[in-house]
Length: 351
Length: 146
Image 1: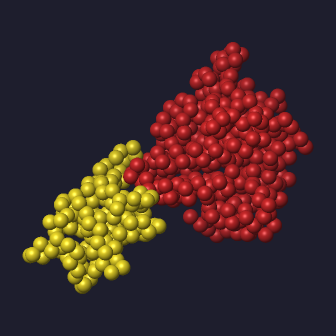
Image 2: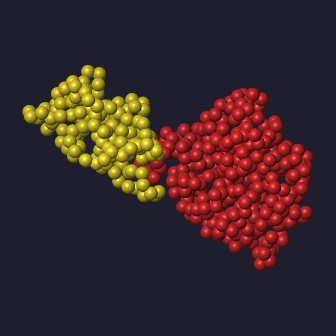
Image 3: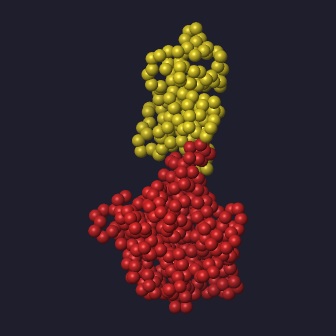
């Protein structure tokens, strides 16, 4: 059984977003008030797989859910996931709302395997919280979603209203990369030269956000909050946790609101997705890295369909990968995170 | 006397602070060694003494004399050459709640904090350094029990 935590869906002529955008905002869009800065790095070979075209919910079912046997798929809708970048706050808020209604009435209505993400504009945290309360009650909207680029690091108290709403609705707060470098640079020390270098730099954002969430005490303020770090890499986590734990021993007095080692907070509150799965030269090293970060508890499978760096659940794991850990990554961890039914034939989900 | 607070079910750093609040007395030892005169260490001062292979720091706090092992459990630095100050106890996010002024020893190498009175480390629930009973006799001699 498989839960895919990262399926990209786009409006198209056959599944348009326009009907979900209020008339007044459509005028603002005609005035180009939906503009946003670009990071400027494009994959020269295109960002989508070249062997298929998925334009509608039916396409995604036929091309992805059915052939791979995906039990549940969590949507990462475009352009909704990145509305935070839009200059106009009015338009950003309206397009977040449109992206959410569009998901509910197209994808979620089409197939019960689709699960939605509440897109929010983090540039306007109060509006984001209101949108979470408006649409987050939908039983198949399973998380709140934003892009990795933001005005502030995610531990900033400006986002407290968003986390408060997440906890109130029981929704994890998910982050997806891809926009890094839109406001500043994707690295803090200069601009990469091309897409290859830019793509390699994406985990930097995630590490910065994770460090901020821990240091600012977000998990003390919001003990129910869960954070999902989608597509930002995994194998960097162990050394970051070690570094944070070591520094904490010397510098605890500077963050006295922390009552546990940083790794305790991360392993309890944060979940990560696999794709793009790291492919070390010696495949057993992947298993070792995964063991170090308790992947059997915190790692959830994802394909990133239909992007070029897609992972096939049947081929992504190296041979010899432990079956029990694979089962938990493929299904159980995400089922527990999103409150989905336990694996068929499994008596009880381990807390 | 304050009632002892149980550490059970507490987060690690809270448990560490409970150990300080409870001020556990040093374990019973019997060998008494004169290590100097009480009046040679003013309040706020310290003296590092060697007893056979054991190096100790004798600290004169407001509350009296305290002895703690001069050996950081982390990488073996001479702990008692570190700075003495207060710390901040776990509190609301973004607030600094001062605690234990003048009795926290910061290792001179990596900065780990230890309580001079109880030997408890403040960085997790387990870490600690050995402490020893100090007495002053009628003649004004400083006696450590090791």
